[in-house]
Length: 289
Image (tube, rainbow, N blue to C red; front, side, top):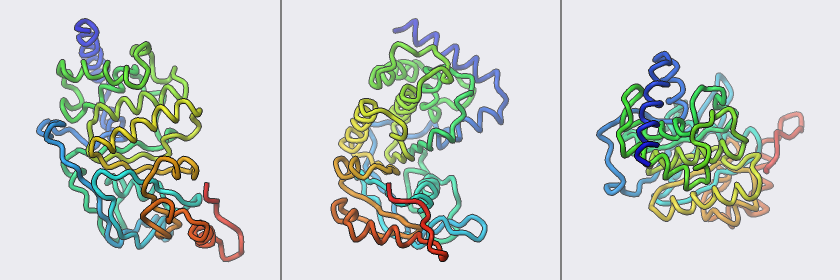
């Protein structure tokens, strides 16, 4: 273990130093909320939620969603469901501070303290970035050491623990481009373990995964909630949501229902969500999936 962590610390520092500052910043910013060596350790973690007040996001003259008011309670596990084009990903980006609201506000103390983790859809991530699996996971500890500092021993040791937790202990030295879809998503979840965030945002975390991998990763969502973390996930599988998520926000460019999953996903509410995205010409935009 000591030899492995020493090698990781050296290789991570070397690979990052070989990259330009802008490239480093672009890669880390896509997954991490910033360098903050003063961030509190896990034993000081307190449950925190997110509140939104009349929140709207607009791209040009087109609203992604509007008029969203409510609260993701501390230590809650919430699914965000809706038709294609309903504004689900835009909502998560607004919560993560990536997209500036057109109106309203997001109240999220965890974001200001660099204790929010955001996992975008896989197609938004550059699989060709030249880092190994272990280096990718180690960068989840970004807030402890920044872009060019050698990670301290405790970070390197935690990488191997995170890889073991997601079943990737045998591939730490492989390039991320060489991983299967399921392996890459497991590596991203190991990275989330390293971030130790109090609020976790996941955009389609189980898309294109087999049933076994999905079930393994669902374990972490339940674990995080049990640890007092707030978890919000955009999903498309209604059966999965009904089985595993106590709370659901049904969104169709504006909130249709928000609260207990069995009530939010009633047949009446799902029908309302579909009708909300019917074009003036009568054609549907997407479907609830």
